[in-house]
Length: 393
Image (tube, helix red, strand yellow):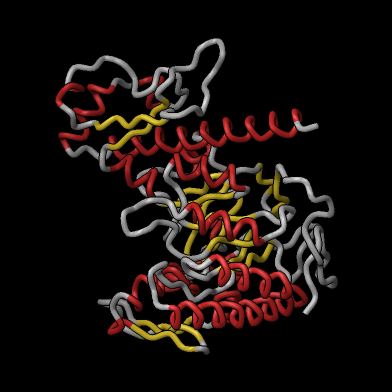
């Protein structure tokens, strides 16, 4: 099977999305160039909770992740089509990545087999309360993602926990590679059938392999032989104690040539994003920053911006817990250096009052702030990367 190339037409079979081996600073997508690195909040069911598309734009977000596993159930594919596809339905004019559903199948089925089963042919599942059973094969996953209008399509993969047995990990790698090949075949078939302009959707493969670097390298090499526009780190990125699996993330990134963009799927803690960017990852997504916001955990930079600006030195992240009694009468913003609506207009004391009252305005204001924190972090990392490139001999 041939590999993919940069700006393909519907008729061509591309080889890579860039020719030079330097780390890329943007990704050409149907809905505009996506500056890299990029943090993508999870808009799982077509929305980031508590905010709308204009709020996302104001926070500096230019791409989101939606999930085919959930969207095929609610609102359903026929409804999405009737509403004009995901972009039109959500009022979002920028890039959308659609996750394939492999991780959700792992969460649902591997942890509670009564809800479904995985086989070489795909995933069959019936979530609790559902009226009917759903089937998600590699081909159907690609069909749905492309019909939804995704800018980046993710191959269906067989996800495992890092501590799963060697037998399960070997099966996961074999199944993930086989499914990836089927995904690409379906993707190329649909490219020929659909009319695209100068740009087409991109297809990313997902590297599995659990906690074994050799197994991850083997999976990566087989996916490279099939050929994709980019790649993602597959599997839960944290160990049992909640620590980032840095060795596995680094080994997986090292197994993929630097010219390919790589998505650290499920990585969203600010410190983890910074660590993975420095390993060579370009894209990050997670529900953590927005979930933390809604529960009253607000991110700030420990060092206030001065003439020399912010830096990401040790201990740069600070968390403000809105329910702390010390904030009852705090008449200042979450972060004096933040330019988000929340920090420029509202005090911490007022936000605490809203949270204690259970007013939904708190969810919006807190989410706006944490997302703006993430995009400010990305801006700092981008500047850090630019400085590193210009100072290299």
